Every structure is written in structure tokens, then in C-alpha cells.
Image 1 (cartoon, rainbow, N blue to C red):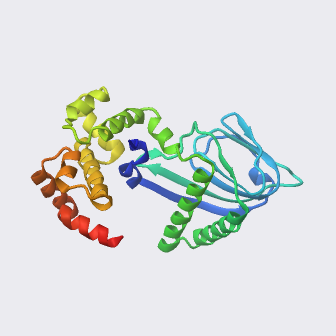
Image 2: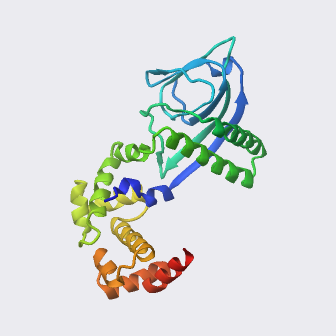
Image 3: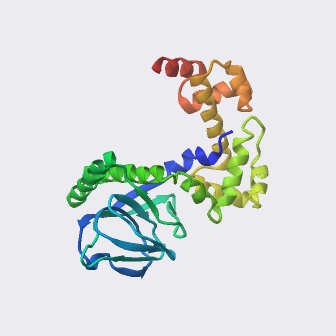
Length: 280
């Protein structure tokens, strides 16, 4: 069964990214910093040169054709050679899920070796970001957000770091909600009560409901219903399971399921099945 950490649509609905600076530089003094803790994230593509990066006490030696993310709030020391300084495309960016930073300050440096056939795309993307950042209008801002997301996904995916969302959820208080999400995911066909979920988080229901909503953007029981509808939609689109059996799978009587499904999607379960299967 899929973990909710791999299916946290509510979390990603609250994802925001903003490019706050974009540039290309090969200046020697601009790279050398000691024990900085910036409030913004840094994304770099190293096009040449040599030097080192120390993130939270761990030393790395970035090389040409590497892409890397330096998380906000981490302790950063950077050095480069006076005779062969780094040539670096870079941007500063903010990334949050709700009010929490996407990359935790205790995290490592995310760094990958880029493949040859990706390098021209990366340089072109950074060059476009630099140009768009200087324009500073609505369309340029949207284009830069899209470019940043593509680069972040490339760095995380190619570096085998797609479990970063799991680490995000396990950080401090969010770990309690991760446990609740797992519990919900495994019991969608069962009757679930908010008191039961609150007990898992060791909170009184009156505190648990706003606590859950603060992290997930919806109340616990609305989240349960959303997950049930997601499961039902997949079953309707990708299986021939009878609608009555799908209703049973999500713990609802057929009549109630049909009414709620139409209320949330605007169409009946059978109409949804017909339209999505035709779309294939």
C-alpha cells in the first residue's frame, strides 16, 4: 500500500516558490563566505573553476557540470581559487509548504553530476531565468517559478533525493501528522472519527483539528473524504470494479457515495467513469 508520504497532494497544493535573485558570476571575492546562515536557498550550476563548500560541517568539492542546492538556514562556508574561480549560474530562492521551509536547515548539500545531454538545457534555463528576473513582470515571474521547479526536480530526482518530502514530514511536529496520514491511508474503508485521529497525535480533538489544518490545509475529516474520493476516482478510471464495490472500498454506502461524489466532482460516478475512460 502506498504511503501517504508519496501522495500528499494537500501539502503540495500549498507549495510556493519564488526566485529572489538570478545571475551568472565568475568573480573571486563574491564566492568566499565564512559560516553564513542565509535565510534563502541557493541553487548553483557550476560551469567551471574549483573550490569547496562546507555545509553544516561537511566539506564538498563541487566540480564543473554539477548542480547543487544549498538549503536556507544551514551553516555555509564557501571558498574558491583565486586563479581559477568558479564560474557559476545561480539563483536565490524561497520555497515553502505552507509556512514551513521546503528544505530543512539541518539537511545536507544536494549535489549531482549532470549528464552531458542535460547541460545545455540547464545553462539555457539559467540564462533565461537571469533575463526574466531583470524584467520583473508577472509573466517573467511565472516563467521563473516554472524554471526553478524544473531545475529543483532535476536535481532531486537525478540525485536520488526524492525522499526529501519524507524527511520534510518527519521533521519535528510534522512527524505526528505523518503518522496520522499513514493511519488514514490504511483505513479508508473503515469508519474514522476525529477523536481516534487526535489520539494518535496525542492531542485533544479541539487542538488536533487546527493543528492538522495548519499543516495540511484542510480539516482531518475533510482530508479523509478527499482521500476516499481520490481512491474512488482511480478505481473508476482504471478498473472495471462495480461502483457499489468502490463505494464499499472507501467505507461509504452506495447512495451516500454517489451523492458525495457528485457534490465534489459535479458528475455522477458512472459519468466520471465514462468521461475518463473515453479520454484514454
